[in-house]
Structure formats: structure tokens, C-alpha cells
Amino acid sequence: MPQIINLANDTPTLLGVNMIVGDGLCSNIYVVGRERATIIDTGVGNRQNPVWPQLKELGVEPRNVERIIITHAHHDHAMGAFLILEKAKPKVYVHEDDAGFIASSLGDSLVKVREGDVIETELWPLEVIWTPGHTKGGMCLYAREQRILFSGDTAFPDGYFGRFDGDTGSLDHLVESLRKLIKIKVDVMLAGHGVPVLSKAEENLKLSLRNAELYF
Ligand SMILES: [Zn+2]
Image (tube, rainbow, N blue to C red; front, side, top):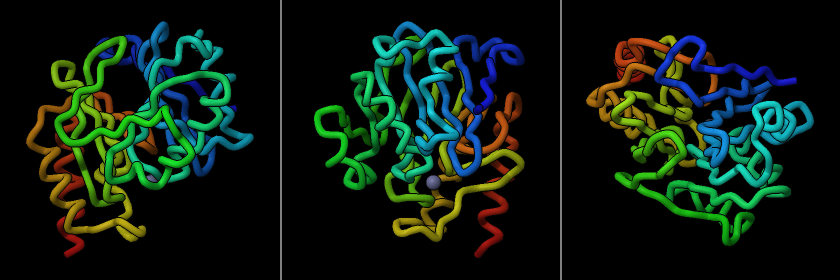
């Protein structure tokens, strides 16, 4: 069963944020808040990653799931949304440039967002930072005051960065996106895969940028 990590145990600014660690080829799932929870990425939605048992363990019932945010429309991040939609009625936020890939399956739940939009959550507002490169409509979510970045598959721990060889991927765009990310103040980075970066995430982002630039 996927492991649950209460991120507040190590970092007080993450009070109310839990991480469901992806098992196998599955994204991490972040649960922000509990009464009116926002779920950032939903995993692959297979038998190893059933989502609901973990949400229940966190005290999140179907009526508590207010919204889902999908950082990009790859199946290992997005398919779990359909498991959630079987029992709950959240809005599902996707960047407009990735929405086409799942729009028809989401129907009325879909909310398209773009650069600069602000998504309210139970804990703090999240700004949409458009970060194309891994996919055209990839995005990061940024809690400015708390300096928390949900980096999707754009930047990973240890200076890694997302693949750019997919259908709508682009190394040029990925480098531009990482250049955008090093301009903001980030202490904590919570990526689509891998462990949380709980301090000095700016240095991690600079390393990711440097490594991506070296690809040229
Ligand atoms: Zn991906």
C-alpha cells in the first residue's frame, strides 16, 4: 500500500499537507487540507494506487474533496482523478494547453487555468505558474507567502528535471520554465516524483536549470 507522509512532521509551514507516495509508475499525490481538501496530482489510479484508502486514513471523505489540480495530463498523474470522481464531485483544474487530452472524460468537472490564475485552497492560495517543456500545458503551483512549490514533472530533487521527449515536450521550453522558477522564492519543493525537498529548494532548482542547460 502506498505510504502516507505527514509533511508537517519535518516542516511546520507544511501543516495540513500530506503526501501519498506513488507506488511504481505513479506520481506522488499531495493532499492539501482535510475539510475542503485540494488534491494535487492523483496518481495512476491502478490497483496499487487506489487513492481512497489513503484519503480515508487522512480523514478525507468524498464530501471533503473540493478540488483536484493536475500538474499535467500524463496518465501517471491524472488517471487517479477518475477513481476520485467515482465517489466525489470535485472540480478538476488543468492548464488549458493540456486540458484537451482529458477534457472529454471530465465533462463539467473541468476548470481550465492558465499562467497567473490563483486557485484557492483550504490552507493558502496557489498561483499557477505555466511551465511548458515536459508537456505543453505543464504547470507548477506556488504558495508565495509560504514559499512552497509543487513542481509537477518540471523539476525533481537532486537537480533532476522532467523528460522533454514526449509528444508536446520541448527542451527549449523546459529550460525557459526552469529559468522562470529560479526567479521566485522557494524553500520547499514538492515534486511529482521523488522525495520532498524541505529546505533550500532554490538551490535544487538552480541545479536542475544548470543540468538542463548542459543538454544543449
Ligand atoms: Zn509526466
